[in-house]
Length: 279
Image 1: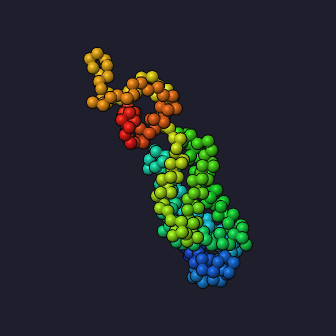
Image 2: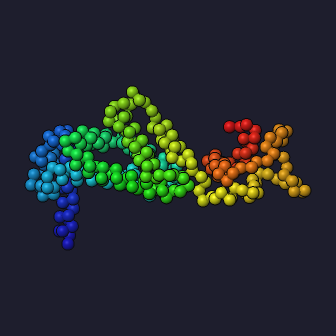
Image 3: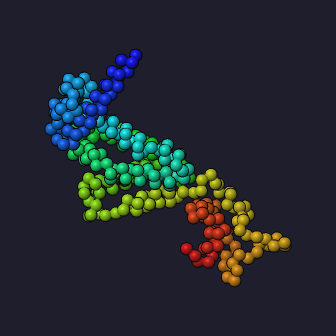
């Protein structure tokens, strides 16, 4: 039993060495110019050992894609981890976007590998298709489900929104890193992320709140006090009260509540600020 365990462990270590050697050679010579002899030399194993684990160069490259994608996906596009950080969808999306941009900016090997796949896609389209199937397709599906589950976003097409989200980040990386355009089209990543999140959450309503909660006399602010006669006391001090009566639609109440929640205010406090022409 112990000997079999050691054999498996030794086999895993050999596969790891082969993949590490293959990455080194592929990045140095490109896919077409790489030979299995070069891979075996870089990995420190015999060519027979390489072929015993991988049928051919295409199989080796695909295995490398799968390994890198799994590591990349688990470390960056981890939707469960993002949701565990906060129930607020904007916080989760911001964390995902930051991880994608920051990790890709600092991991130059990953950037070089993406450049290799794009560069070889014309002659070897199946390699590019393997990358799309293993990373892009899975991440788009998971992000689509994530967005669809947050009904408070009021998205008409979560799948298209997922493509906009990922496409924006990928385009930014291509321009900034792969095409060396940082000085030509400079932009801070946080600025891009802020505006991307704003676009996706622009129609967001307060979670778990319904329109009928905002009508009538419900949910009056605790800041307003009544006199013994039952009338509200003034909270405008010497300023004239400019809003005597406010009649809002259910949609307007929802939007008002969302703005108030974002700024950690009550609805009455927000109305008060509008009445006084404050920002």
